[in-house]
Length: 70
Image (cartoon, rainbow, N blue to C red; front, side, top):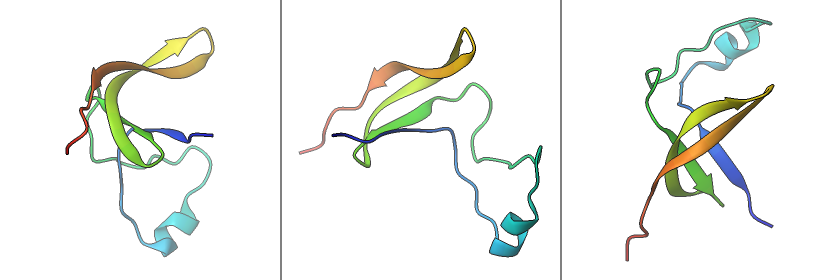
């Protein structure tokens, strides 16, 4: 089995702030709207892509394959 993750962005906050988050809370990420998302397979960056909506589901379209460094 493989684990696939799409990372929209990252944020850092204290645990106290995290515990105060409620429904509808907005967490600011380190990326802007329209920037590519990182796609990881087994914790290794393999591609970048764009967020897409297909019917009522959210997905990611790969736009760039990241070549492995040797």
